[in-house]
Length: 184
Image 1 (cartoon, rainbow, N blue to C red):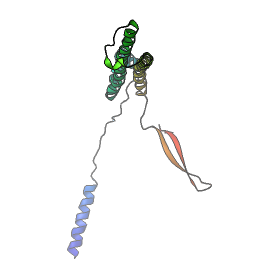
Image 2: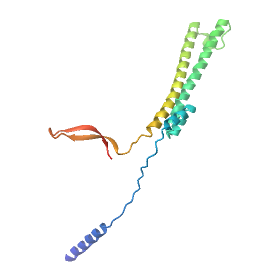
Image 3: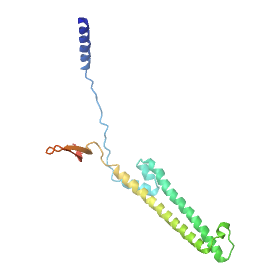
């Protein structure tokens, strides 16, 4: 029994000796601040104005490029499709006024008022598609500009907006709030 205590004491004694070994850990600071480029938002907007989506590539937001081309491309497709249908109904109406027979049998059964109404609908849809195309183009430029400006903000751990639990010393109640902390 005494030998077991000596053996146990010896084992714990050696483990505590080895536990006192100092291991020196050297870590490098990986946070490097990039210099702020005041022309970065203007460059991104210029690139997006030259070629839609190029400002998003400049900002390294590659996932936005298909969205830009999808929105502008869909608007362009709808513009072209509505223009073709408008021309079809307009030509049919002009042929009727000139006294020529109808070239398309499906339009031959429509009266003049329906042809005029269809022309107005397709003309309105064409104009809306053009408006959306221009709107998505401008939105592409604004998005590149804002994204480039916001990418230069300081978002390190020294500036924090965190929830806080504050204990009221008078009523002994806990109050929940939000605190803005800045550490130096």
